[in-house]
Image (cartoon, rainbow, N blue to C red):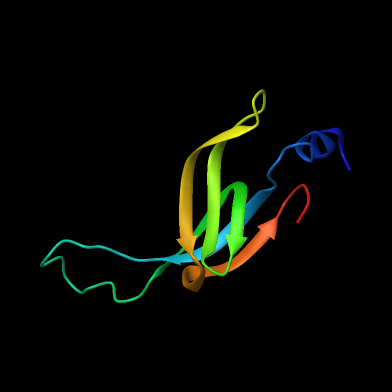
Length: 88
């Protein structure tokens, strides 16, 4: 592992790339409805992954081992989760 990869592995949470399908909203009368979910790719600190879904955080406080700005993606919408550093 590179020096940077080893440094990242010290953190409490691994960094992950999540591919998932998101619901779509559009204004009334905005032409043809977008009648399918849209593929999203989100990167963040993987807080939890279980039968309910995936939770990511987008900021990590190294000095006190805390996180901020959390997002939850329901399991039925998640297509893949790839750990890019740390423990799986």
